[in-house]
Image 1 (cartoon, one colour):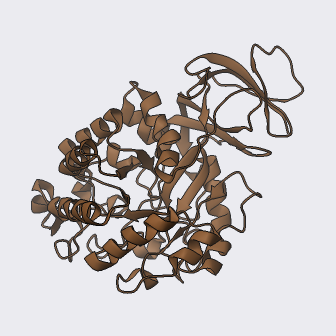
Image 2: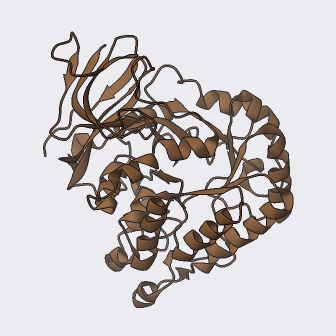
Length: 425
């Protein structure tokens, strides 16, 4: 199918058309045939009052719960959901059942590549069953297609394992991703440690639990060499520590969950378990500094941290409920809110160029003759999130039932595409 995107503002820092408004014709071979003024074409026309396009978005962290928890989400549906959310590539976490920890598991995750709009870049576990004790066969997984190695939700607590992994991956080129948390400081905690946790009578997770792990890992990086990526940082001091390390030349990168840019711990006043995430929602000062970190470039990527949960895991007392938020479809509305109408292109960069640079991948550019890998969106348009518009199998989002500003129109990846058709409430 051919597409004509009319009067689209192009947000692509590597394109000669960056921030210009042009018509874009994509032919039925998935190639950008023309960029300019196009009056007529035998193609499906895509319009919107503030139609904007960028290279396809890339999500460095999502959970599709497959294999093992397909009642929450599955790979096939998760990829459709990601495409509807504007993504053309995604890295699923390995915390499935069984854990993604050998070459057959990697092949399983790649089985839909080339058949859908979204390409899977598998991540393999660093340790067997993500328990932190014994290393997996990372070289086999790398040769099978894994570029990322991580224990996903589980921080790598074993310093010897982390040092060996840093050294080992220097030979393969794979990237180590760690979610920084010292679990000895967060045992039995359910939310951020601060004024709000005191008011609610809940045990809190201190910011120190994240920051002390980052400091430890940076020291180990300095010792072992290599590179490391910190996933879903959440505190003001974490941003400052990483910024300082980058200035000293450390090969370090990081990302933040989109919802951390708009939500804070004050929203937990009524114990809504849909706000229970890990790392937890922090204070407003943390949120402000995360946004600053995005704009200044300390934070390399924005991720969905999509974590579907079924009702049995969420309709419980707050301290008993599982962590996680349904968050793929709300990535764009949340960054529109976080940008507050200013510097939106800097936030879009963290969905396009930023994550690919972290992985050492080339970013597709919007130029005539190139293969089309494009996300189309309108930052000013609104849509209702709920009912048939929720494309996940799960419902654990605090934003369900709301009208959201920032609409993803669709995603095109070569000859594959997904165009959204939202229904009204």
